[in-house]
Image 1 (cartoon, rainbow over the protein chains, first blue to last red):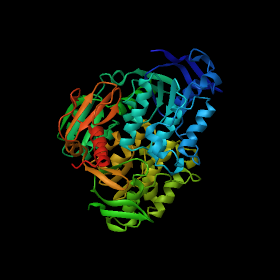
Image 2 (image 1 turned 90 degrees about the horizontal axis):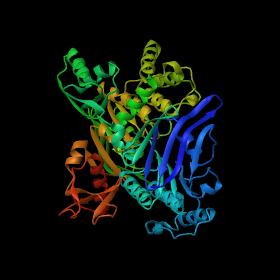
Image 3 (image 1 turned 60 degrees about the vertical axis):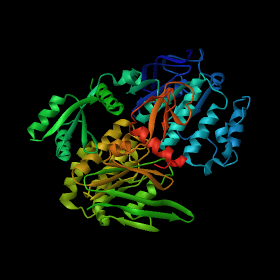
Image 4 (image 1 turned 30 degrees about the vertical axis):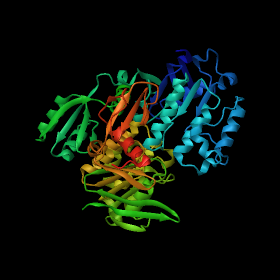
Length: 287
Length: 274
C-alpha cells in the first residue's frame, strides 16, 4: 500500500483557538478510513487542510508526496454533504462538465447510471442523486476520495449499493477518507480515527476501537422503573425495546437495582460502536 | 390506548405518498419508521398527527393538546430565547404560571440547557436546537410524541442525549413514534416499520424482523461478487438465497438486524414472495 496522504503533527489555530491539535493521520491506497467525531471536533478542518484550502499553523501535510496544491487537487475526488452536483443539468451533463473541468479522458458514464443519463439531477430520487455524485467524483479516476457523510438520508438498500461503489474504487487502489456520524457506516471502514476536541483520541480498526469494552445488559420486569433508577444515578442508558444497556460494571448496576428492589438479570456483553464513541468522548473530556 | 394508523393512505395529486400503512403505538413504547428520503416517513407522521388528510384507512390519535410533534426542519423559534421558546409552547398547550416555571426548569436541567436559558434559538448548536425542540414537545407531557428525524445530521454525543429524552418520555408512559434513516438506531425500538415508496415493506420488533428472514444468508470473503442476490459489506460480500442453497464459496451467517433490513428491501425490490 502506498501512502497517499500524510498529516504529521499538524496544528491549526484560528486566533487563539486550536481547531486541530497535534494530529497524525494517513490514508493509503486501497483502504477506507473513517473519520469520526462530535460536531466541532475538527473533522472538517482536517479535510480542508488535506485539500490545501488551509495551511497548517504547525506540522506537515503531504498529498501524493507534495504540498497540497491545484496540481494535487486534480488527483482528489471530493463529495461534500451537499453533493456538489448541478441540479438543473442532466446526469450526463454533470458528468461531462466535471470530466472537462478535471481535464480527464472522459470515460463513459457507468452502465448503472445510463438509464438516468438524460434526467435532470433535481428530478431523481435522493439515493440516486448520491450515486451520481459519487460516480462524478470517480469520473476523473482520483487516487484519493474524500466523502463527507456519503450515505446520509439514504435508505438501507441504497446505502448498501453506495458502499459497493466505494469498495469497488478502493479495490481498484483508491484511498478513501469518509467522515460520518453513522455507526453503520463507520463499521464498514478498514480503520477509524475518532477525533475529540481537535485531537485524534483513538485510532485503529473497528475491533481495535471497541477493544474489550463491555456494557451491562439488563432485563428487568419493569424496564421503566429500571431506566429511571439507572438514569438518575447518572448512567448512560441505551434502551433497546424493553432491554437496557449500561456502560460500566455490572456489579454497580446490580447493586442499584437491588437497592430499589427491582428483579432482573444483568449480563455482560460487548459494547457497540456508539457506546464506545460516547465513552471515548466523555472519557477524554474528563481527563 | 393504542394510537396509530390502520391501512392509511395519503394522496398528493397523482402521487400515492402513503399506501395502506398500518402503525401501532402503545403507551411506553418507542416505534421507529426507517427509510430513505422520499420513502414516506414524514407523510406517515403527518397523517398520524392530523396534518395530512387520509384518502383511505383511519388514524387514531389523542386530542391535539395531548400530542407533541416535532417536524424535521423546524420545531423552535430562532428569534426567541430558550426560555421563551418553552414558555410560548407551554402556554399554547395550556401550561402556565408556576407549573410552567417548574416544568421548564426541570426540563432545562434534564436536557442540559439550564445555562443557556437566555440564549436565542438561533445561537444554539444543531444538537442543542434538536434537544430544545424535543424538550418543547415534551413540556405538556403529551400522550403521543411524534418526532420526524430528530437525529439526522446530529453527532453521536447529541444523539445519545436525544435518545435519553425519548426513552425517559416512554418510561413515563408516552407512546413515541420516531422516524430515522439510521438502521442502527432502529434497534432501540419496540416496533420497527420499514418504509419504501410509501409502503410498509416490513414491520415488527427488531427480533421478529431478524427471525422472519427467509432462506439463507452467507458471507463470501472475496472481492469478486458472488452469484445471486448479494451486497458488499466492508471487504467481503453478503449473499442471500431466498430459496435453495448458498453459493459454494459462502459460509453460512446468522443475519443481524441490518442484514434483515437489507434483505427485506431486496426481497421487495426483486418481488421475492416471502
